[in-house]
Length: 346
Image 1 (cartoon, rainbow, N blue to C red):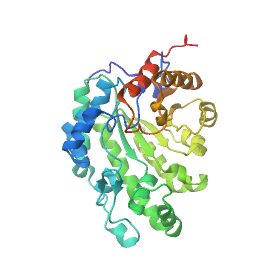
Image 2: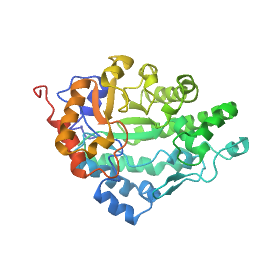
Image 3: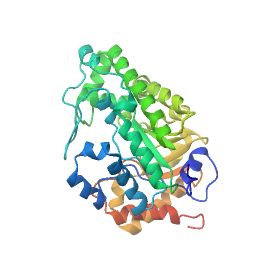
């Protein structure tokens, strides 16, 4: 195994003292990079995910072109429902479509607990190949969707701003919802353990739709399942938990045993720290739209962000995924501003 030449991310997650925060960006491998767009014109979305050579090439692009302190494997959270037996299509310009959503017991019985090595082995291959190709340059992040977020797509059948049908399913067929959430959880645990074994140093759990639930419902339909995943990974790898919009649960998340918590831009660093406490690493929380500002503005805002979070127990990142229309030079300016940061800057 190669010794890491840059282990800033791992040190930040372990709470070790740092000269500057590490920096990476959610969705950094993909849609804003010209080299990715060339591959997108040649191969369908799932071809890109399922071909380990392509996934590796895409994963490494931002490390080489933007200079981030970590690589995150190119994949998608919906590979898990796919592995469980659901059809998942990616419609260009529209997002995911699951044509046969789960609506009743019958639909649930059609799903399976997959053998992850058989169904998701391509992700493990991509991780192993990426790890080898990185040759210790930076750590490698794996990821999975949180069970609640996956249920949203599996029940709604497509993207939504509110996921009313998914919520209605949980509230009207509660027992069934918990059965489905447990199946997703068990699959996700096996999947994340496989990622760690294949070379992921860190696994991030994305609960993109956690913020749609009330605090009580978030605990019932999301957090209790996330805790199972984090618990199962304690001995395997470091973890980061990102639940967009769920700032109300920061205290609860900080007690889950995760090493880091991602936060979005709808909460101040000061308040996030107050809720989460001092014994956990925070990650975030630059508004991705702000990457469309002029470069001097981006650099100024990044410095202000780090001033507010401090350099310890902090990972500089966006508060959600990078937008497809962000110029590469602007993404680079974001990363450079973090790398240039020092306590002397006033």
